[in-house]
Image (spheres, rainbow, N blue to C red):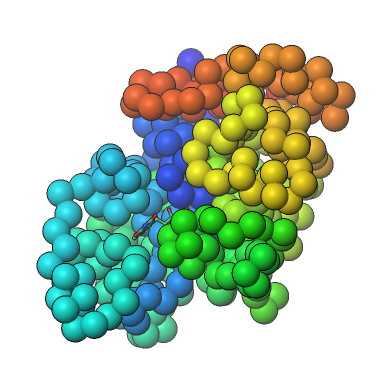
Length: 318
Ligand code: FO1
């Protein structure tokens, strides 16, 4: 199929979602792909402004990400962190030297009064990408987990506490954040073919994006097909703590639960072939189902899943 005129908006978190984002980036014309990225994980660490999901998407698409961790950069050195440790700083969050340069740049630009959207555009271009990587908001939205140990901010939960505390609820703290002009423009584009929900954690990575009223409404009322790729195969998450979190919040771990979670926001869902038995229940929710192999590791598999997602959008549209 020819994808040269296909325009897509994708919603994406970090490592899991960026695999599909990479496939889309290699399938479509970069300028025709907009990736609305979660910023609920952003935080200030040792004075640096860190946006892990934006950076993971940029590094992945630019081909410079660390293949072992999925976050940070390949061929990294850790001299600054070592010295910070010697100075007695609490270095629980591993920031390499090259990665640090990006955080320094973003922190400086922020102090100069630039918006996160503008800073991200500058960084994206410097990494040789024409893709529209769009922070979900220019305002602070903080993902906080209500746990047995009290309220914990996202990175404290995810990295410092290794996702161990039992979670009862996920909340997004913000002062009425609004959708950015760039996000609105991407979603309102008359030539847009559809919206893709990457297989990121729905509760920790996609919900923060949807917590912004303007974005949720634009997706809810969209007249082009919206398709999600399930982050669950069988009773397990493909990546990260999705299934642990679902169990703790009393949600059955299955693609059907993900479909229910996104009901009203999506027209179609791609689930793993091994979950074929779930298809009927999802169809009954008014959501079309496509079966595929959704665990993707190689570049070819990521492109194949990206093509299937776009083809699914075109099938729903026809
Ligand atoms: N994740 C970890 O598990 N440990 C780390 O020390 C760590 C450092 C880090 C530095 C920069 C960056 O952009 C991401 C980093 N991550 C680390 C990943 C990050 O915490 C998560 O991937 C996301 O926030 C969840 O999507």
